[in-house]
Image (cartoon, rainbow, N blue to C red; front, side):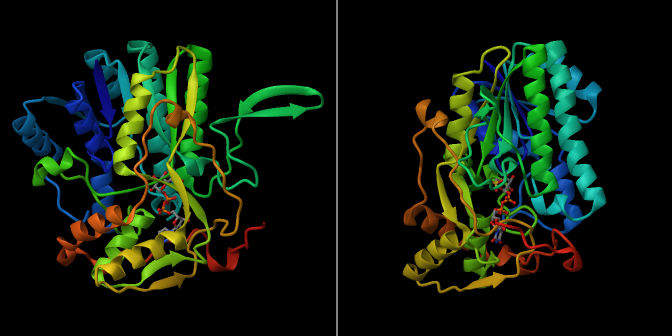
Length: 392
Ligand code: USQ
């Protein structure tokens, strides 16, 4: 089976490509290195420096004897993606190729426009290319739990049964996200659902929570196979940042009260979920939506867990409640349903002291490389004079 991984140079795309390669699938990667360009623009770098993708693939081929194909180009260039799909004829397309930072998308007009045009037009070009060249392929698309926002009801897996004036229907769950990045994924979801409904494509939209983790069995096989781990305020996710902050001796940056709840998932469970989606494909015309996370925590709760594990290892840290740079609800109901992947066989790796300890040890090896100047958030969601308190 041929699997095309879009965004195969990234934090999730690279380990997913290796994981699926080991499973015996024929892997092709597409990437335009736009994340590496934003890193240069914003002056941030991953904790550990990475070889160019072409070199990493050579290391992989040498270590395992398994080939990975590569096409360099952007989904926003429709001719490029048309030609790639015509040539590769993939059975599955795993799509990570999007601008992934909520703070970057909120920096200003040009970053918001870039995020939405790159993500939405790229995905739209991909849907047209699939319709022309591989209409039977299964699209496995990385969405986000943040598409839903924080409604005061349970968040269903994509669709909700509504009764209205005596009639009933199963309708897309309402989406009220809190960044232009998360909103770009809402637009993608609508376009993908449309392409399934009207053209009969097949897709699985994975609404993933906040990912944490630094390596997988495959990235550990050689030091040059590591993935892009960020701790900065642009690309670093909360738990990854807290671990790096503890290690380099700065206070853990909890935004606001830290009572905001988020679904989280270990990097290795992301791989498992992608594999389950691939091996149990959607039907023609179906747009399936899975909520891809394994447990929920408050952000302050995550920070406290990192502090407590650090303390047991002799590393003392503190929490600093920073004035929240984001506009988001801090006190809210949060109960997203997440049974579909478990029904398909997901065996979660829950956050444990051992996992946090492993991350602390791993980050400690590169402690000297941490640039503490990139840690504090510099992008605010709104100018102070326009700041509103979120109701509820
Ligand atoms: N937060 C802190 N301190 C920090 C960083 C974050 O308190 O130093 C808080 C934020 O205010 C937010 C929560 O932690 O309430 C999560 O923030 P995040 O930066 O870890 O994650 P987010 O920007 O929401 O985006 C990340 C990924 C994105 C994915 C999303 C899933 O970067 O690609 O879609 O997680 S979710 O958050 O469920 O929408």
